Length: 171
Image 1: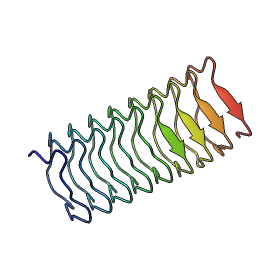
Image 2: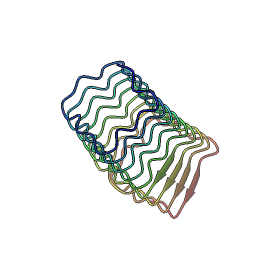
Image 3: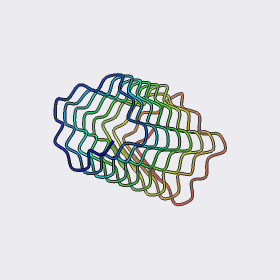
């Protein structure tokens, strides 16, 4: 399916199978993809502000430069997805699987990440600001990552790589 640049604000695509769909640059504010399959979909530069992606399958999806401000990603599967330069401000990543995900230079601000799995993810240059929750970062690459006012008590940071990472008022 090709929805490149489409305006689909408020669309209800709950449970839809959009595997491999092209949604590059699409306007998807307030859209519902609850339980949808977006595996290997191209969402580069898409605006997913306030979108419902709870329990969606976004494995291997391309979300580079996507805006996901206030998106609900609870229990979403983003394994091996590309979120380079994505804006995840105020997103809810509770219980989401972001293992093996690329989040280089992503903005993760005011996010809930409780029970999220970021194992083996690449956070090179990513900025965590005012995030909270106990998450799994085991084996993650946090090179040049910045953690400001992040409350990550109970998180698993075993076997991480973190040269030149910056931790300010983080616990």
